Amino acid sequence: MKVSLEDWLTDKLIEAHRPSAREITNLLHICDRDLEKSQIAELGPDWRLSIAHNAALQAATAALAATGYRARKEGQHYRVIQSLAFTINTDPAIIKQLDKFRQKRNISDYESAGLVTEQEAEEMVALAKQLRDDVEQWLRIHHPKLVREI
Image (cartoon, rainbow, N blue to C red; front, side, top):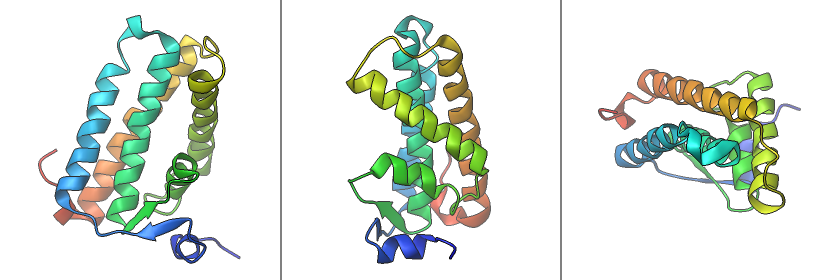
């Protein structure tokens, strides 16, 4: 049985949502802000990964919203990342990598500092940048009315 966003809606993992161009623009602007800040080397790899991860979440949230859904609070970050398979058809390997960084970010933010390497931070920044570009391109093709000058 193939899972879909409609299945998630039925299972109350997401809820229906009416997106606006303003909302999508705001989410992508937050993504852009976080991408910029994630490249400040002085912040250290833990913070850089966390900020880049948030940038990726904002881009993924924009794609999910454009599709007409919003993740519920419980498991929100996990669900938003997983939704990329249904929204912009992200490669499963990329989703797996994003989820790995989500878990690393959770440990770094809530349990133990200093676990993130510089390479991991750089990888997360690169992933977030690519995701931001992929989401904007997808929006322009599939939901042009929701895309203002970004």
